[in-house]
Amino acid sequence: MDVVTALGGLRARVAGWRREGLRVGFVPTMGNLHAGHVSLVELARAHADRVIASVFVNPTQFGPGEDFARYPRTPDDDVAALRDAGCDLAWLPSVDAMYPLGIEAAVRIRVPGITDVLEGARRPGHFDGVATVVARLLNQVQPDLAVFGRKDYQQLAVIRHLVADLAFPVEIRDAPTRREPDGLAMSSRNQYLAPGERALAPRLHQALEAMRDEVLSGTPFDTVEQGARDRLAGAGYDVDYATVRAPDLGEPAADGPWIALVAARLGRTRLIDNLAFSRA
Image (cartoon, rainbow, N blue to C red):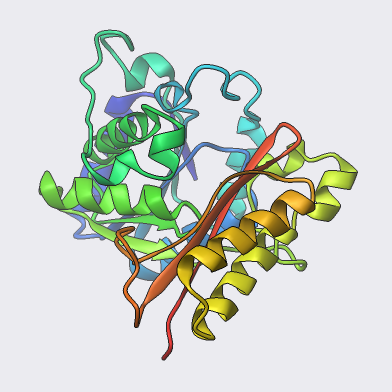
């Protein structure tokens, strides 16, 4: 596996694969890789001849008071994990390579509408940073296929909107959320949880399952949502939202399909998760 830190080297490698007629898959990450990230590489490998993964902690998607400074950075371990996963190239750009004119002078991208609710409402500017860095990464790598996880469901929706509207010639594939045996969605932020908090963390997924069961039994949406908030608060969570939406994140239809989404804090750690379901 090649490890590349200069854009020229990345472009040259991809150009060589293009001349061979090879299909290129791409997995963008912020590093501190776990089994969930590896599953994205495996999915890309199943649909491409060569796979590139990036490791870049993007400063423009962190707001004031968020965890950019303490976000775990493990580049050596990440490179080893990508090599073991069968990745062909690891793209590790610096902040200067990603934002060559500086962050203050950087062109930024905003996806309207879908970024104004849920995560977007609670983290102003977050999805502007996500859209901006994903657009840059897709332009740098120019893959045929890019893979994103379903755990960050709203992020996935934002990226699909971005790619469709700007006509990026790339196929977006989503990968199922990987979970620990107790149901907790895998996340780099899970390591921030104290032992007592980690024991409570599976309640988030349990709340989603209860929301699903209640909706399917005919319980009104507002009752379902309030019940989830109450259960999580009773378990020690500080709840940002627990909601049922349509797959496009609009108001839910009476007959589905639906997605339940939850965001809440345990101590200093903010966790998100979701669960898609229908009557079928």
